[in-house]
Length: 220
Image (cartoon, rainbow, N blue to C red; front, side, top):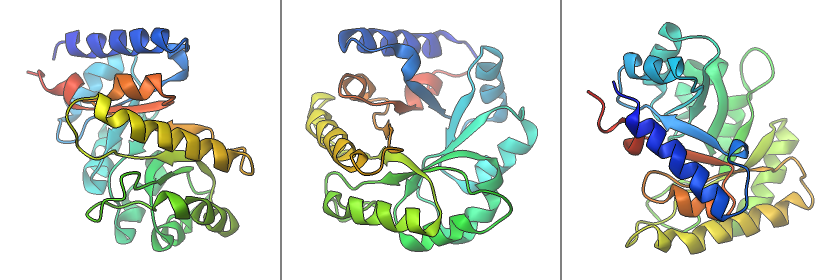
């Protein structure tokens, strides 16, 4: 595997941060390695990268057993409650908490449950998971009462014509987080932006971006 694509992504992160007068070190790049062999993850690890994302519990469970222990695994996909046991112990951050049944399942297990992000259905799309923006505050309050530690919000905007289409949704998510953070100061993270629109997301306040194809698609 070459590292050209990875370095290009990191350069673009730096350029987008500069346009927004932000420090690029404040932005976590999650390399979404779904469908890639453990070898590809290892190559990026040797280059110094530590944050990797998976969207299938079985795949994350398998990779985490053969790769270094200091990798920070992010679960970024829809998670079934009955699959929680496969990944809970390895997870650095769950990006897709969107219902109470999953919250209750995430509480079960040894030790303190890993922190979570609340997934918001920012486009109010019927086919997508996530809580609608109007219900996000109530949901955050309920999971805190359960004993979970939400760190922020995550969203995937509707598909549109080019990266600029996503901007209004990123702005809305950031404004929602800011409103909720008045009462819940621990809501500091915004996970938004993927291969097609991560630069716009950074310009609008993303603290975490999830990039797979731009990093891995040319892997040989």
